[in-house]
Length: 45
Image (cartoon, rainbow, N blue to C red; front, side, top):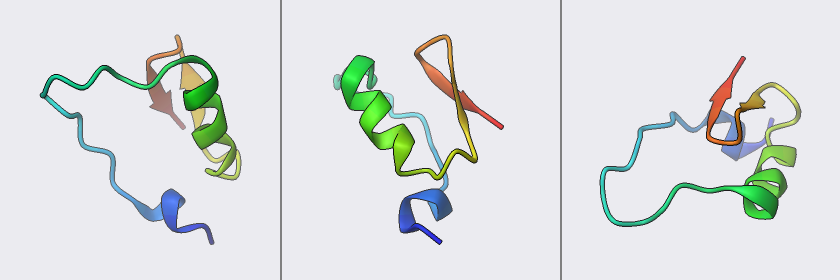
């Protein structure tokens, strides 16, 4: 199983903007389709 799929997601509260667009799509592909990108701003199962 991919290491990225095992990581627990904790929202970051700093000054870095959330992932969107191509960057989000690229990382989403590494999750082996176990998660869905919802409204281009969060993940859901």
